[in-house]
Length: 442
Image 1 (cartoon, rainbow, N blue to C red):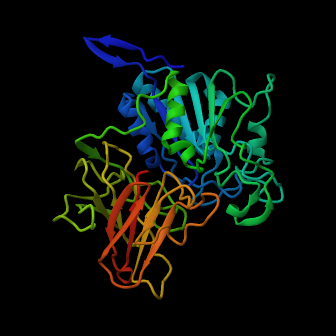
Image 2: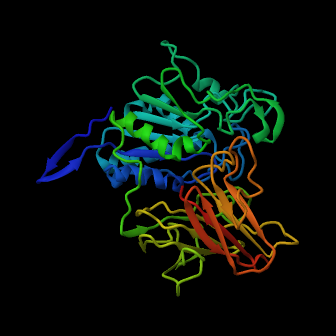
Image 3: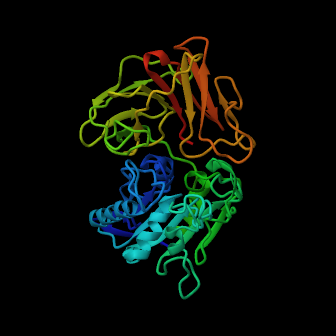
């Protein structure tokens, strides 16, 4: 464990907590770690010791051995992680880092540690990482990173002399669901192959030699981004429960992040990119919490440069905002966000493509939950008067977005809520090239 020790420099208390590097999952961004970082900060882990990588091309190749435009290999992933570890160690002066990963990110952590990184890592936490595969059939995508019988996981899971599947010298924790993880199911329904017997069960993330914990009813993403995942991670690192799972609000906030799009050059293609979308335009408006109406002129505007940053923006605590993103070849994207609780430099934004034509809808409003999925049995979900929304299926939690098709009139309020988090936006006209997302924090 990491003791809560302090040293004193020129009369000031300085925490000696090690840096943490967070590693996102397949197709994701560093921005998914915002609430996790806020919980660490709220329990007095220094903000400048919390870091998250952004893999430039976040989706894995269909076959890890074959080049694929706009996709990353397992080698690419490890190289990105290794570069960030070196940067963080040099900047902090620390001797080791903690690695915390979600899903596919755990593969990069395991490979990095196994191939010379162990001396630079004290602890590794893997949330929802399908360590024994999402499936184990060599008939289905044999070269995929996610195939438990494929070359990547076969090599990583080869037991050492002690019979363990983890690299010695590092403390390992895995966090998994008890059966609500869409990627740890006995059949391939969530893979688009319902008749495929996957050969895996809920315990796929567990590793011999690690501390393996189960989070009841957690979905795939909540194994990393939920409050219970944070609580177990904190206790694993410190030996004590966190003081609080709540996020302590800040009255004055500074927000920043990157703007990205799709494709190998960030303008052409269907796969998400975490590269800067140079030339994109960002406008920020304060909005009414109940109606989504703008409360005056833009409070922030910027054209994105080579660094991809859209800020910094000095925001007000408790105030919801609308982010309007525009770029050549993209839809005008309206992102409505419920109030930010703390400052963050990873408020990453993605400009959206125009969807396929919809003959009936005047507007499309998506409610998105990036840090988890919607569960009809567990959650209270509402969107534009529908509770739950009709496109949220029963059974294992497996969708993180729901869409309201607006057929009566544009520019009206569309409200969404999820387990007590409320957000309101406006229905901007699809025919004029607008798309709308209500993005939840929790």
